[in-house]
Image (cartoon, rainbow, N blue to C red):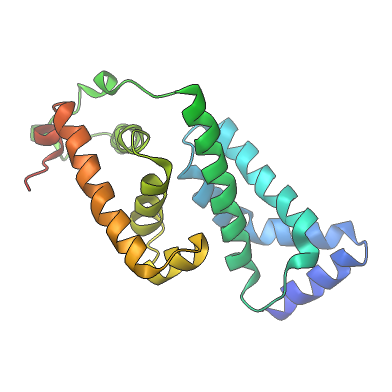
Length: 187
């Protein structure tokens, strides 16, 4: 653990609120990027980031310092994001895929990156939460199967199998929505 983190954590546990503010400032950007994977709505993302830091604050005594503080925060963030998806799935709040008819394969160089990202997130939203989480961590966060297994409490074989099945399900959804050609999905 970085010495600065160690000092701020110790001071925070002794009641110094400014020390926790230092930790938040130090890691807010990384946690915001991760939470953006769970919601592309800026207001919701901000709430999720806040929830991560609130949960971390109340759990700070359980942090053992065996791994970097950021790794511990990311585990909390993944749980918060997964819980958000679970609640959202109960409400069935999906973006209709027909909103993405404007994306065409021929215009691949002119596709608005934001529209492409929105389409990808809309497709991912149709996957079961665990499948969505594996693909999000694997492709957006560039986590290895070992890291994903550690964060989720799974074994590596389970991560690999879930990723394989999730990619297959994602392709099936894109095919059902007539998006394969538009996305350039060839195999």
